[in-house]
Image 1 (cartoon, rainbow, N blue to C red):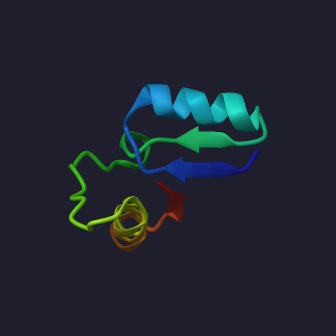
Image 2 (cartoon, rainbow, N blue to C red):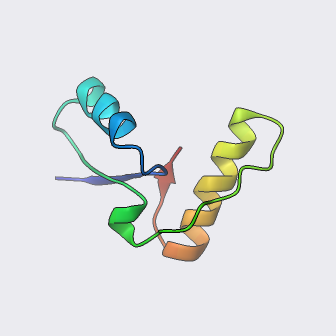
Length: 67
């Protein structure tokens, strides 16, 4: 089953996305990939912060992800 990294540690958000996409994927949290730091969100937009988090995860942990 394919794995997707969701750039969050919020279990409620992960449960929501599982409910929407069903059991087609295994969703991993930041904690699941060993990311225990708080990723800064310094962009003025939601989309900018999502890109910032995704870039941080890719560059530091080697995983593609969504936020």
